[in-house]
Image (cartoon, rainbow, N blue to C red; front, side, top):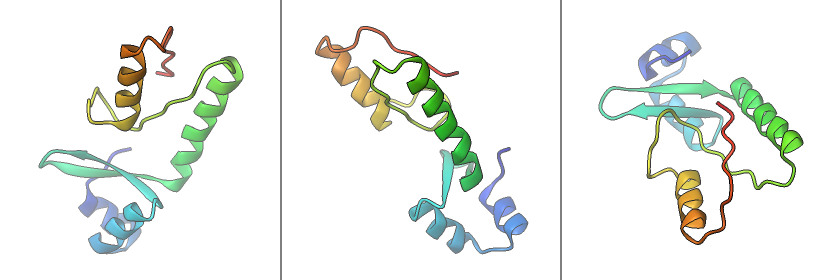
Amino acid sequence: MFVTATQASSILGVSSCTLRRWHRNSKITAFGSPGVMMSPIFAKQKEGLKWQQQFLLTKCPQYELISDIGSGINFKRRGLQTIQEQASRGMVAEVVDNQ
């Protein structure tokens, strides 16, 4: 579920400063849309992401895991940049996406 920072503050009963501090300390992850809103993903949801990573490592143990959080393609994401860099060097034979 995606909510604005204002909605998250209200739901959690904390200030927007607290949300920013939690984000800085990796207690929550926030997705941003330029000039629109920030949508936090809480720590419990990180467990689901860890499960997906473990699943992929179980099914494809010979592969290197590179992960990013976000929607759509953002060429500034570190994981995508890593894949592009390795592919340009001929180091990538196959990419497995969990979506």
